[in-house]
Image (cartoon, rainbow, N blue to C red; front, side, top):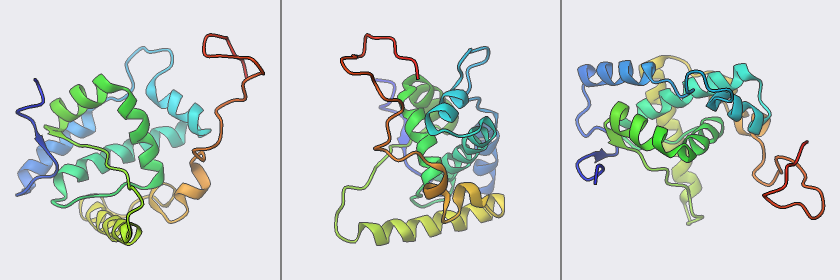
Length: 178
């Protein structure tokens, strides 16, 4: 099993040299498959009803977040916008697990959503603030559109919102045009 020897989580003993080498790999990672007619960022923009510019910026912020997931030295929490990029990347299993986690991050980064336990919201908020502190340490001030308090309310499609309405009697085999 290729994952048996791969570490998970953040660096226990982060250093400037390790962080610099890691960022060089993360920054060079291309999430969009070259030459693909419908690359990742286009699908992200379409599914979230974002401009392609916002989708590309969100992808860059996702890469910064995943860098922090390894280099910050503590657990991190994404913004709602970054979380949407992560959710989509997770379904590109080879890109996420093999190319990004194993080859770029040299770490397995699991997505651990909340489960509604008591005190979870407070812990999430503290971890998010700590994430923003680490972001500032490595990258400067985070962009408000992606990391600010309004990011999830103004630019993330609600989970209950359909991507499109299916006509009566349609199933997954039918071709549906919006």
